[in-house]
Image (tube, rainbow, N blue to C red; front, top):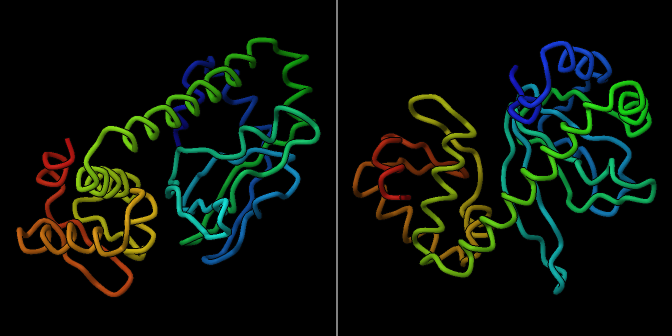
Length: 215
């Protein structure tokens, strides 16, 4: 598995960092961490998919995104000893990750100062994701936001006809809209032969058409 976030390191640095990780496995529906838990490690996702949820100020649960192989989470856990998890992470399939503890990362930073590039790259990537999400929420029509979230999920799941297991409520939450609006967009896509809807799932039949509509 290639981790894009490690692209700034040399091959030997990447090997050493990955060798310092501890493999972990989670079964479908396992809770990897709860929002508010102490954050003591980051996870590099080797296989499987996880859903990211947070609690809103009104006490509701909001779905932010789904993460897949090659991605990571828990960057903030390595910043300070009192860091807390900012989201609840749940496995939606069987999952394998490589975990790197804060203590082990600190050792690597002392031995190899160039590992700071890894930290800088991970934080910069997080800022880019958050900035893009804010811009979309402020300036894009709601239908386009639903299409973009669905196109992103198709890339996460991969394959010619990605079978995305999530509810319309989750998709609506990711796009910052209502379930009724997400359902309307999905029904239109189904009528156009772009997707096929199932119970708790969406199968993307025509990925190219979806990408065109999302741009």
